[in-house]
Image (cartoon, one colour):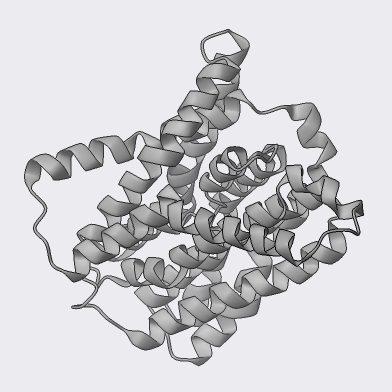
Length: 327
């Protein structure tokens, strides 16, 4: 019961912020223009600041565990590859395929990981959440930029054009590389990693400003998602949203967790891996999709379903792992 209450306290406020955004839109407080501004701010400023702040103050050198980081990296890369194949087969519309793919693999690792571990093991935890973030979040965002660029709706007209040549392919490749290099979220991640590795001090004033700006990202992003949520379009996307949610909350954990246990991971390590594999899809899915030319409806549907569902699925997985004696 305590695990259920904790999970509900962690996830239901997120879901309710989306509902508030929807209500505010209906009563005229947040119109589409305001929601667009909020999205832009969160994508370019809020989320980069949040990720920078989370990573910059972590001691990656002191808690370094190459086996654990390598497992997180391989599990993330393999899950993206497997879901990519599944999406090519099951999702016919190119732009929806991109949203389906990133919604199926991207977890709220940075937002939930540290809080979840601290809730179970206390503030004296040994730092597995930052290492999990290092092994997974950069891959999340790099592949999200690649996927959303390659499946952007504006490129769908080229699907029936057999005259595309190597110069057009080179142009798309260059555009993808530029998108990765200039993506604000990726820049925030690597700036935080560099700050931590160089052991640079974080002045209190700077720390306060970064924390305050970063703390805006989640509520603004969630309310803007709710404000632009179209339930009619969501119902049209309900099947891929439910499939993606099943993959996110159940399938990835069922595939990779036995390998993690077999490799000897336990305690904080297993909880961090559980968050990486089976937590709700991050609100960044919707924010990045909207800012890179996608409709965003399927992304918001996946985020809403997984956010509501993970309160119960994380409790289920915690019960299983406790029964097995690995946490």
